[in-house]
Length: 227
Picture (tube, rainbow, N blue to C red):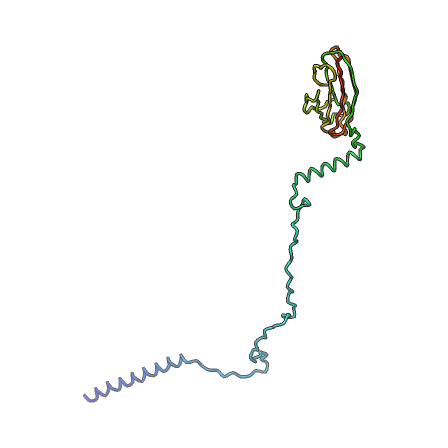
């Protein structure tokens, strides 16, 4: 009986020792193994502590000059205008340039104003006819000349274009002087305003005939006297 108890205790002791031995081996594996460093003459690694770089407060960084601050650009005080003036009307300016260019061409080609700048009187002409026809045409280049025709201060043709062919109208004459006026409204593009007029009676006889070369707003006047 005593031998059996001893055997049990001995077995328990052996198991306890074995268990403690195994636990010691496991703990030994968890601990780090320190290996002492040895100096090597061929080792070129500089183990000296790193010195932090100083922050530069000058205008030079790493040998390069810091960029200079460009002063703020000032805008021109006067607003740019492609037409030469701030509030210019483009249409009017363009028209003025065309007129100047046209004038230059006419002067260089000898087409300057050669018409009369004062009113022209074509004389007194007598007739016994009750009616006359007033005819007119452009004897030169058909260049867009316009005239206004009045009889006894009454406008008969307010604005009529002069063509190379005769055209006109018929009027009844009053006793005495009948005043016929031709007013040059423009000079066309081949200066001046040029025309050929005729006054013809009932029998197609020419009572008066003449030519004019007038500047703008100049009149050509003729008197037809009924006897």
